[in-house]
Amino acid sequence: MLSFVLKRLASALPTLLLVSVAVFALVRLVPGDPASLMLGDMATEASVADLREQMGLDKPIAAQFAIWLGKVLSGDLGQSIQFAMPVRPLLLDRFAVTAAVVVSAVLIAALLAVPAGMLAAWRHGSAWDLGTVATATLLMSVPSFWMGLVLLLVLGLHLGWLPVVGYVSIASDLKAGLLYLLMPVLTLVLVESGVLIRMARAATLEVLRLDYVAHARAKGLPERLVLGRHVLPNAFAPTWTLIGLVLGNLLGGIAVVETVFTLPGLGRLLVGAIFARDYPVIQGCMLFITFVYVLVNLVVDLVYPVFDPKVIAE
Amino acid sequence: MKLRANAVIGLALVGFFVAAALIGAVWTPHDPLKINILQRMKPPGAGFLLGTDEFGRDVLSRLITGARNSLLIAVLTVAGAVGFGALLGLVSGYARGVVDRVLMMVNDALLAFPGILLALGLLAVMGPNKYGIVLALALAYMPVVVRVVRGSVLSVRAREFVEASRILGNSEAFTAWRHVMPNCVAPLTVLATSMLGWVLLAEGSLSFLGLGVPPPEATWGNMLSAARPYIGQASWLAIYPGLCISLALLGVNLLGDALRDHLDPQMRQ
Image (tube, rainbow over all chains, first blue to last red; front, side, top):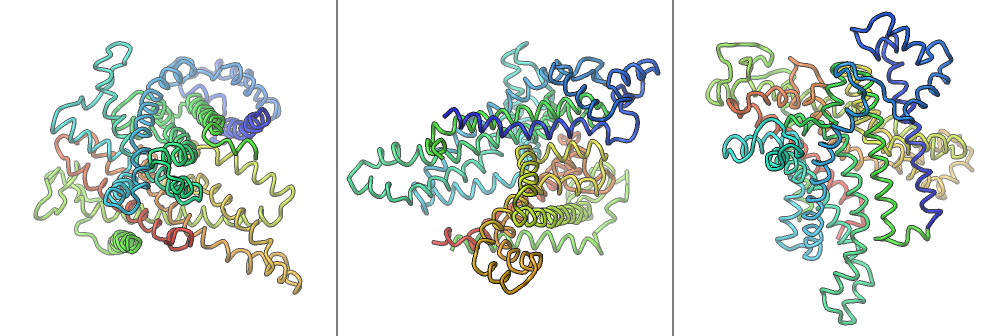
């Protein structure tokens, strides 16, 4: 068990290292002086010279990287140009919004999609199965930004059930805050259910085909026990990994949904920073999103043996 | 039976959009870029079949040129990712040793990283333009190809006919190209089809965010992005481009399913 955990931890290091090199290189790849890029157009000569000194721009590139990495590791991500505030609190603030939407959406999607997919596999070839697969394939083909716009049009404008634009923090007004989060969450639930349904169904079909299921049925176990004890736990393992991947990918792809619903989340912060050439924020967002992504997948992999103990033995 | 329905519907949808893109190269009902403020936001009807947008441009014509832009970007991206990815995978699986280990370490690191985020980072450096998005997405999706090809190469190169080619005195490069590579084509075809869907979606998202093909040129993504502020007054602007992306994606997904079922004998029942 310990060696499994250590191995998995070690495998996350190259990703984090590579991403930090890439994010460090980002500002060096853009034409222009890195120090003036980090401070924006309004900076004074003196402050640029100051930052050049701090970044060690007169030193070799490896030393610059060491200085930069040291700062990042101590939590100093620099100063945002457009917001004139440190990047770190900005990131954490926006991340709270993104995390609330993404985590609740994935949770709801998994609770709906996994049973639906498993049921479809159990009744393989039935009308329920065909209907579920068709729905899943349709859902997989609708981009989240269009799903969002359609919901906005139907639930927001035509029916007038939900607020169309804006955002109220849950902390300041619980009821209004939840109403504003409902449509973004619903969008993601619908969009992400498709792939989860199909995965749960495929994994269950795979398990149902195995000999021990036939054996369990042959020895007269009630179907309820065959499914509950033998099929579901084994079929859930691959789906569990996918849930982790979906969660992580949403962190990268959330920007579009946040744009549709004008939510002040991490994705929109990153896209806004790209437009504003706010390099400290771009760097901070890339690092932070990668870190969370790696962390999510790490946790998913570490929990994986609970569903499939074989991986530790291997 | 179901398998055939998948393939037929998928082919029909993809064929429809490819045909629209090809026709759009020579003819569109109206000039997709011509601004006419007097005809602003006309609902669908005679004259303008799918209505006009906030600048009085014909939506149908813009959808047709959008099809060309989106499909061209998707095909170029997939070709780039598959071409370079297959080469790297072949080299990695064939060379083994240090080369393989270093390539795989970098590749795995890239794989453990959301593709769209990588593309965003690259676009932050290059700025939004048509070729930037192809390069960014091709690089973002290449690691999957490297993985798949390397895996096939490793299993194929241990087979007897590869040994035989070597014993006959053929060079390593010839053997790799002539005998190993063709055996990786089946998994690669399935992957390339799915990737076409991923890229269409990613290009749509980036265009929607304003980081794809810059306006006034039309893509389905940037049309939707422009429609967002007018959604209350001109809902058709938000409906048709999204419908196009969804139907194109559905076609590609169905085609991918059919292809996978066909090429993977285990799934044939």
